[in-house]
Amino acid sequence: MKNKNTSLFLIFKRTIRFGDSDAAGVIHFHNLFRWAHESWEQSLEEYGIDPLEIFPVGKENNDKLTTALPIVHCEADFLKRVRTGDRLTIEIQPKKIDKSSFQVKTSFLSQEDYVAISLIRHIAINVGSRERCPLPEGIERWLESASINIGPSPI
Amino acid sequence: MKNKNTSLFLIFKRTIRFGDSDAAGVIHFHNLFRWAHESWEQSLEEYGIDPLEIFPVGKENNDKLTTALPIVHCEADFLKRVRTGDRLTIEIQPKKIDKSSFQVKTSFLSQEDYVAISLIRHIAINVGSRERCPLPEGIERWLESASINIGPSPI
Amino acid sequence: MKNKNTSLFLIFKRTIRFGDSDAAGVIHFHNLFRWAHESWEQSLEEYGIDPLEIFPVGKENNDKLTTALPIVHCEADFLKRVRTGDRLTIEIQPKKIDKSSFQVKTSFLSQEDYVAISLIRHIAINVGSRERCPLPEGIERWLESASINIGPSPI
Amino acid sequence: MKNKNTSLFLIFKRTIRFGDSDAAGVIHFHNLFRWAHESWEQSLEEYGIDPLEIFPVGKENNDKLTTALPIVHCEADFLKRVRTGDRLTIEIQPKKIDKSSFQVKTSFLSQEDYVAISLIRHIAINVGSRERCPLPEGIERWLESASINIGPSPI
Image 1 (tube, each protein chain N blue to C red):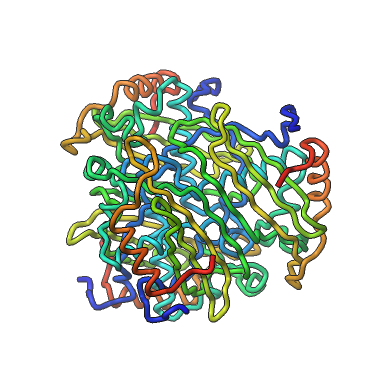
Image 2: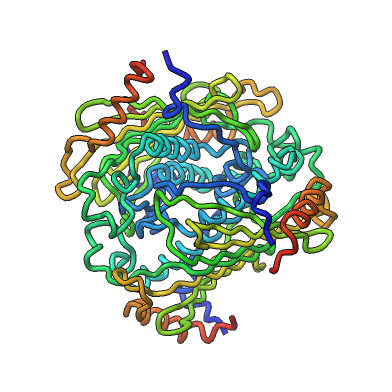
């Protein structure tokens, strides 16, 4: 069972803004992935991982970053409509898949109802060879922390 | 077999632009869904469907549009990296699922290689009741045209 | 002088996320306008204005919303580069221009330094006639509150 | 006078897509800058400049790219509303400002009417020192070509 006190993984409240909507008056669908990715980043930050250890920012850290984490798959289910002004709760469930890949499932709730769920899968590759490689140590520790705090994820 | 002459469904060439990339130097993943949706819209347009019959644009057509086509599911696989300046070929494979839903599979190719594939599923709902309803007639005809021109889709 | 306690207008801290960047390793420029607009919306919300009074969300409030607030001008100056992981402070300075228009200047600071400044101008129009009309009452009150709490804006 | 045959600078037709709109049924304002930037890139490409000479794409060209072209200012005026399905003509007017900076004015027309105008200013900086430096040679030649084909720009 999810421990609701685990703030690293019960990430944040997000109010849907006008620019997130389309002319149907609901969120434009692929914004969901933006929020999911930002929630993952926020969780890493709260866990104490420096973004410069994980994300490229140009020449400054390009020489040090030997591992990249490209997304190989993503999916989302939209269960209820979400509109400007709605206040969502966003929860993430990270899970290690194997030694060079992991996924983050993200649930979006309005009041008590699930309105959308997304899943993003990353693999670790060596920046030079483009071959699969072990996950960065920080990501490993963060995934372990998730497995302890959240428990096994059903997906 | 796909008929390569079927221009409605072999949509267009798209050059990846700088603003599509992120600091890893590749396309930022969820842009793929934007391109897939735009390709679908372009196919409808080339088939002769007026966007105002399908997409809300505010007060002008809100009273006439009785059916909305919300997205209920989307997914994407990223097979090879795509970078600024890459020129992609985009093909769409629409498929009717049942009387009130359909999907559009979109393939992205660079040279001869598949670099990404996306899938977007829509349902038709009555704008007033929010209940499922039959697909709009224009979408029905366009789906039928796709099934004839492209042949059965394997997914 | 700006009253730093005026939380309505010293909006929030925002961490730059990976998806905000482009392949140059800095924020992709037009995201600044997204953040400026979201900050304005957040300020309205904190002031107690219901988004449904201001922003269209489809059929639900289309009949009640008689005034629209289209943007007629926007501009931005980029002073220092902003990268993934940077934590910005965002301040807004709203100002009434005349009875049917207003602007919101938004300053972005990293540490103590200004990194970017944007300006967005809105006019009020009647949704039916598309003619200029007085600002909505909520916006009027919010602008008045800004003029008292922030003092006259130099622009 | 603008030479309408100058295809490098009379860039392209662009149909506004559903995802470009917001819940007011018009284009969401900052998309205009995306289109302006993409039009600039397309013009460079048609002129024969390899994107890899201008835009970073990661490790592959990071060592070769010594000059970056950050945006220091942008602005836009929105003259008429633009909606899903509208077909716009986009024209660009590049202009050298001084030896290390240039701007691109972009006009958006629907039928014969101007619907929006944007302006984006870039400076050239040395990637290592972050100091101003001369414009890349390709950009210099492209700007010269623009000044001959379009004539002096009024702004």
